[in-house]
Image (cartoon, rainbow, N blue to C red; front, side, top):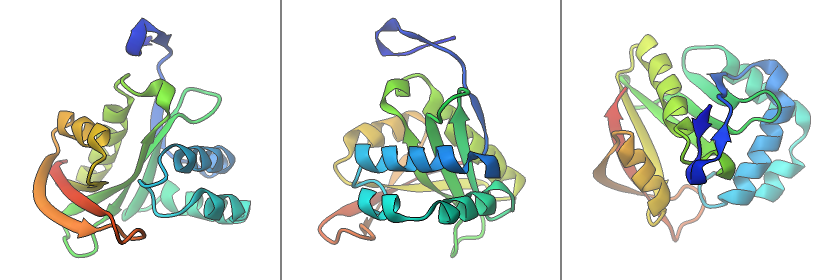
Length: 176
């Protein structure tokens, strides 16, 4: 058991690489992510809801194996409660770019974020990429502080948000 904020005990959850059989639960988690944190991800809730299940299943098959793109999930046994992805950085061979990092609100503050990032880091090192990088929307202080606690450092680099031109993202890095 782990203790959540307020002292509520939560069962341990398995953190593992996604499997093709997770497609339906991954779709449900994706819709939750977009409803909860619409600025943090690259599509809208409406776009994701309109996507056919076959597209989710294909994406999950792709990230369930392979050396350049992987997703890891937190699975307590019923519904998924978190995820983090990693992809080989296209311009920096030794870097894994983290993406789609999410922990459902009831599980925040339980250490699950650290477990998900650790799973991506382990995979990254196995693929000979020794640095992790992520981008977070400027002003998302909750996420920024959480990543700082995990050892990520603000590089000072700012980039335009990929879908909302009025926003910027800041880059953070740490060793894998």
